[in-house]
Length: 326
Image 1 (spheres, rainbow, N blue to C red):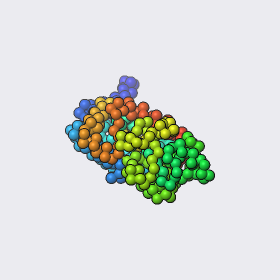
Image 2: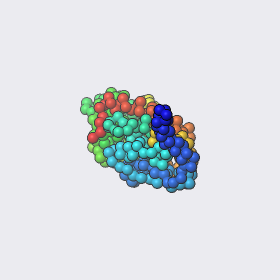
Image 3: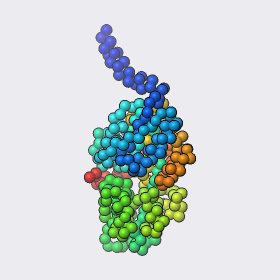
């Protein structure tokens, strides 16, 4: 008889797990929410809506985008991290929300451990660009010019803790080039000041800066990826330009809360992969300057490994530079 309370406690503890496993068999039985941690109309929101609509067709249920904004994306991140792990609440995030934020802010969730990976979606590397007034024509010449000018080179960013900010300090660390970081309220005004000649350079997403490069308003030196962009095959990679392994991209991915049944994760992953094979989806993403991850990078295991590698790479850079959220 004395064992009975302990047995009842064990059964009670197991009930939620049993319930989740049972619900996984019928998943999805209702609509799914994709939490976008930024405002409607931005790149992350647009990518989410394009993919979610096609996922709904594959799953037979509506996949609805929900914008949960604030605190640099952490309110939306917390919403998913603390949600019931049943697959009906999905996070979309990127290198900023699921890597950089974990190093610059105190959070009530872990950006790696509290999320279960579903699939990587797209990647958008940066292009190293400068104002036209700089005489350098290659990346090596740019670095040499910066070291010889006698004062720090001004590098614009879209704000503290953004990928452009991290790339700027990483550039300084890797090349020994003196850099003065200049923060703006978003990447657009920073790029405008490069074009106007008010600051020297920026590490900008390819989708933003390529039209200005094509128009001759700024000069491109390299793309921060291991392979050239399909949309800009004439721009060398950083490896080709003399700055090996300087790889930074704003990649997007889907996660669910930790503890979500694997059967549910597999169904979500299959829906994402089906969506990314759809010609209409691919065209819409390409029009945004996004490159779709290859099939081998669309598995949950690939996302987990890539996510961990990005944390291992960027957290030491961020902490060495003393980057903090403002």
